[in-house]
Amino acid sequence: MKNILVFQNEECEHLGVFSKILNGNNISYQYIKLYEEEEIPNLNDYSAIIILGGPMNVYEEREYPFLKKENSSIKEALKINKPVLGICLGAQIIARAAGAKVYPAKRKEIGWFTLNLTTGGIENDVFRGLEKQFTVFQWHGDTFDIPSGSIKLAKSNLFPNQAFSIGKTTYALQFHLEVTKKMIAEWVNRYEDELVTLKEEVNPDKMLKSSEHYIQPLNNHAFLLFSNFLHLIR
Image (cartoon, rainbow, N blue to C red; front, top):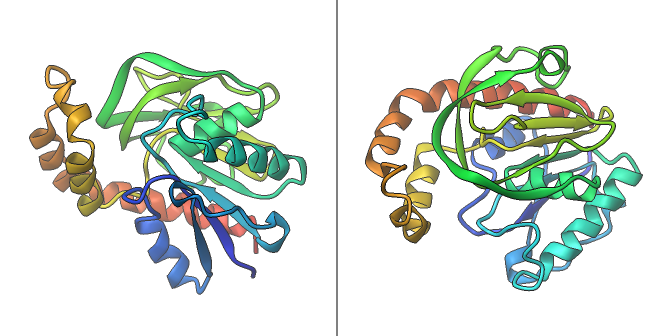
């Protein structure tokens, strides 16, 4: 199996538990640090692409020029049916590359929230083994429309569009399965200014305390979904 190419948009947003799954399966991977302006290599040299999250918005290409290159690369990946998994910002990048709108929501979704699988999600091979309803970690303010021709896989009370697939190779997840308790604590520090503006809506201490209860079930779901995704590229 070839390398997996990982688009990293922010230093503190990395593979998390997904790296343990890759290492456990002896699958190599390569980070491309887009926030440091590293060039995106030839996609044909890789078996799959993972697009991680970040605090920027997909439409902020002037402030973050690498987003334009990232969008072009994902359009290419979709054209050649390269397996792609997008997380949070990564999901929004996939949606935009597939021609759907990405835009600010009425409110942000930060913390632990209930996720519900759609019929499409329940029947999907990559989502096989997941519970119909479980708690996930969220950190986003934008949302997306479901691209034409894709299948909606999950929803939440605040955000009706939480996941979708394109064909049998591309998966977009608005939520974070990859996080660890350490990552969540790092994000609370890194994005402190954002949390200050949301003090009436988000309680960081409560969110961190909730992690003690929810993190292991989340990691179990991460193992199931990501292992299923890896079967696509074997």
